[in-house]
Length: 145
Image (cartoon, rainbow, N blue to C red; front, top):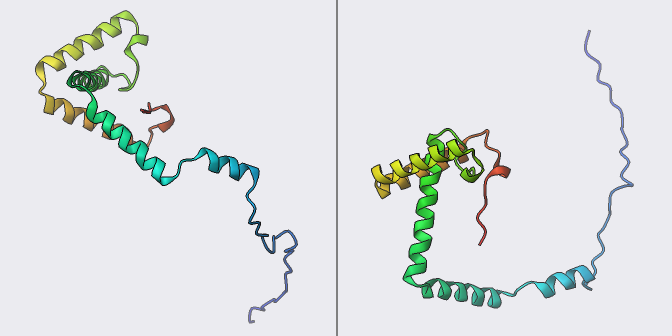
C-alpha cells in the first residue's frame, strides 16, 4: 500500500500586513527636536580636540594623582579577591575586622609586589570575571567620564 499524498490549500490572511509605508518628506516634531539637540560632525571634532588639549594641559601633579588612584584601585581589587570578596565591592561597607583584613592584605601587596606583577594580577582577575559565564554584567561598575 502506497502512502497517499494529501494536498490542500491553506489560505493565509495577509490583511494585517502593511502594503506600503508612506514616505513623508516633512520631519516630525520629534525628529526636529532630536536634530536640534544633536551635534554635527564638525562640532564633535572640535569637542574632541578640546578634550585632548585639556588632557595635555593637565599638570604633572594631576597626572600623578590619577595614576596613584588607579594604582591603589588595582591593589584594592587584588586584595579583595584574595580575601574571598567580590573584587569590585566597597570595603567601607564591611565590618571593621574585615576592613582591617583587606587593608592589611593591601599593604602586603604594596610591599611585596612589583608594579608589573600588580598590573598582571589585576588584569588576570578582571579577565576571569568578564569571561565567566555566570557573571551578571549589570552588577559591574561602569566608569563614566
